[in-house]
Image (cartoon, rainbow, N blue to C red; front, side, top):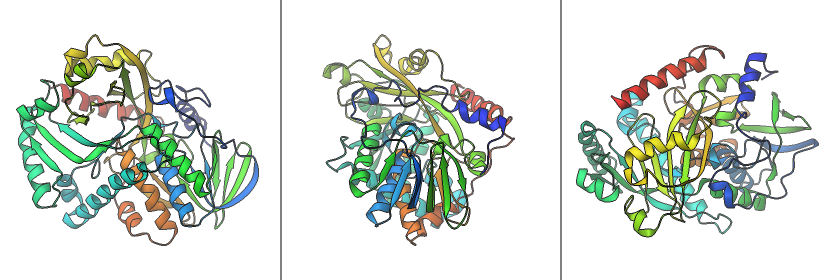
Length: 445
């Protein structure tokens, strides 16, 4: 954790090349929010029990749950609260891990797979419970459909639902055949799938801002515009920004795709990629029902996932396509309109009011990376690979428990192998591009 090399420094700077300092992106979510007050950039020297780096779901949840336990907490965010992937994503709050139970059983055995499933279920309940606060201006809407874009995937969906119903006792998921799928999702693109009524969707930026308000009310000191440049390890760690030094007994890195060179071990295991979303003009209730017949979220089986839902004011929020350069494309709306129109030809001429991109963190195995660094008092949690609304939020609760001496769930997550992406700083990105192009081609074939 030292000064960045010129190559890595350049890569780190590219992570914010698409954004204006101190301003939220031009997203639908950011179009009607009340930003957090009393969160000026940190100045001078200070101390606290725990310094949290990152103002997304994981950092905010960590700070909140630590404050509830009586710890003094300072949270440092380089830009604005909820500025990164936490305030830009599709808002889907899904059960389990990013990897399904069949694969987890193959990877780790049935006992560990069950533990990971339980943690995944706790993650959804954590979001559901926190959303009930009067300080959170975001409702949790139940229902996620997983849609098979190939007919050959349908038998697996049927078997998987039966397995979750019987072996795991999870009765909230049901199988959808082609006809049942097309009743819910008015598209010929899908052949079947499953419907989970315990998972759901939420406005992610409003949820993040709500967590921030709860955290402040609980005593957390929030500081926006406070870019952490380095962490000096020791029994008391020192976190340095351009204008301040924070001494803390514990440090929690909750940076996800924006880790940059703050910790090189994490950056070797968590890779930033970009994803894009559009919001259409509001549709009439009649036209909305010609797309989705219930207030549900949908994600399909493509490796480069298409995901969509409606906002509370009847806008189609559609996310799809990824890119592996750090620069967002010039015409995001055009890029996302293509898959949206392929799935819903009835939306091919709909007006797009908002289009934006975001940077998330993925891992090689699509499972979160948990680790302790320094003298064991520096914790990192990141790489949620598209499952961050639920798992990122619960991770804050898990980190708070670990710092308080109850590390069972943290240990389960930290024991998941987290391979390094191959190549050094110069080769890692090109190798990822090649791999993702291969999977994208496989989706098409």
